[in-house]
Length: 366
Image (tube, rainbow, N blue to C red; front, side, top):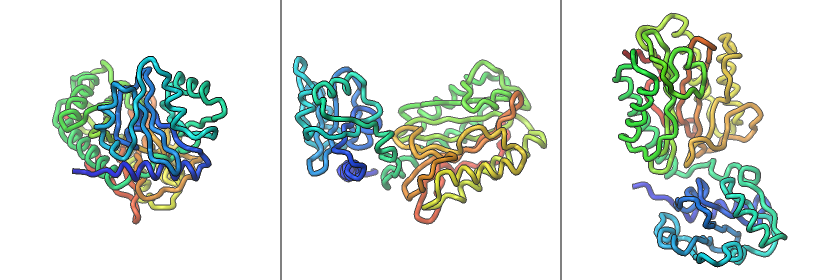
């Protein structure tokens, strides 16, 4: 069983808020609340908010009818839970938990009606979205989170091994996508976020939605799939070929594989996020395909499948141990085919650790 220290997560967030010059944090339902105290209510018009203020115990305000669920959540034993009743003013109740005045960080997922209600009640306060004031709030994972991500990655890997056993030729993309979805659930995913199956020319569209195209013998097929297992994300891509590939298809796949490997080897504490992107891009550019690598090299992953940090030109943030992110270079030849190879990687004290371990070679399928 993986034990999560939610109290330390909240302490770390509170310290980060103080370092950012914030009076405190207001955390509403969504990935931030799940990450910090393990509580995942359904967002509704009823206000729920976790308040983190330096020097004070964490406080969670919930609709009184939801208080039993809140008190039973994984991390709320370290939180003072209070309820508000229908017919009362939830914004007055929340205001009572906040220091007078000041500047607060607030979850990006906060509903506008709740923020506006709080502003009316506390006109002397100002607010900043977490993505602006604390963009790296969830970027550095603790040991428990890394292992949860590793378990999600292992489930995705098992899904890939199984999908290569099914028949591709003569079936529609959406049928293979349905197989991927079923296999992810079979291997423990509670939520499937995407099952990209891009065959032949559709593979040249990085975010192609699986459709009615019939997969043919001779097609390159990009498989990109993932979701949530035990609250943490998986996201992996492998490119397979139906029947024997041509020399050019093998060459393009080899270039992408070498770019992915070079980027992985560049992962180390202190390296800038953009450095990883540059390494992958240099390999592909040198091979003559630079104009066909049309997206960033990677994105962070945690309780959502896309979050900071982003491995992209212009991102100078240094990697630190505990950051988890995808490395997914690709080459997309319009009207012909595409190739992408993606692993989730975590930065350690000595370099990178892959959380996806399936073979990255070009797999031939039937």
